[in-house]
Amino acid sequence: MNQTTRYLESISDYANVEIAALVNYIVIDAVKAGASDIHMEPWESTLVVRIRLIGVLTELVHLPLELMEKLSGRLKVMANLISYQNDLPQEGHAPAAAETGGVQLRISVFPTVRGEKIVVRLFDQAMSPGAGLDPADLIAYNAGNNRKFDFRELSAEMFEDFWRIGCFGGFLVGREAARRLVPLGRGTILFTGASGSMRGKPGFAHFAAAKAGLRMIAQSMAREYGPLGIHVAHIVIDGGIDGDRLRRGRPEIIKERGEDGLLGIDAIAQTYWHVHRQSRSAWAQEIDLRPFKEPF
Image 1 (cartoon, one colour):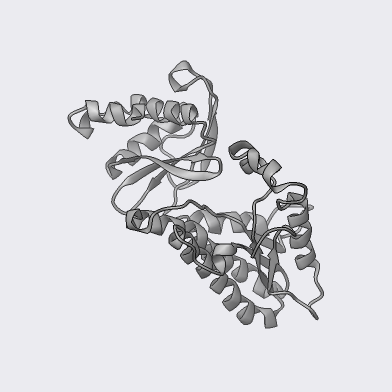
Image 2 (cartoon, one colour):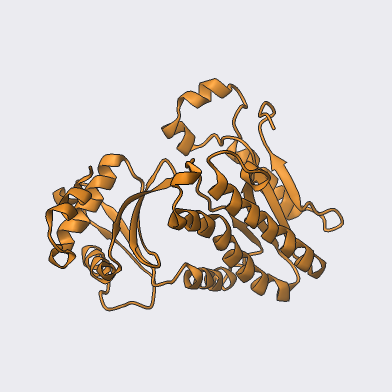
């Protein structure tokens, strides 16, 4: 049992929660687990606190939604942000302190519902970058999460969470990209897929459902906007990627796979750039990338 859960079980009523103590316990649990970041997300009926472990978001605790405003206020105070500013994103740093595990924290607060508003704001910035910079003409949606679950143990909220990241986020990015690029008559929109985009496997129904949906978004957009000069492509990444996530979480896999047994990051980037630079007389809509020894 983590310290956060132990603390919550020690109080008789959530009205008695000491918000500063709750934040401290959450941070300490994340640090002890080796997490890279903490997410506090308001869902329909609960406030979910998740930590990222080796690239995968893992639930730490569920809290009542009514604590969201108090937690947000506490985090703003820690990072010296404007506590009454609720309509704009804010970011700051909280100095290292013993009560939060002795680590410096970067704190970001986004006033948004299901991510839609922040996506719009990011596109506003990307398409109006300022003097000396050109508007973006290559948009890539690369967000994803993957974890094996027994289908019988998969909750509705977990299924929806995978869909939001794997599919719904792609819809938001694709829609905003189309709104900005179609009037210009040029640009590239790339969606990153996986083997789950093509088939379902035991324990990965939630992942395959999300990635297959993203693939259909890419196909539909390609057929709709290709004739208008927008190149939309879906790139399937089939295999492990030779990056920090695998090297930290599964260092043994480097030896197991051998030379060129994992997808090289630079090689993946080269393919994305090549697709972006393709002549419109020969556009690719879908490409599979995998190491030469990867079974498929």
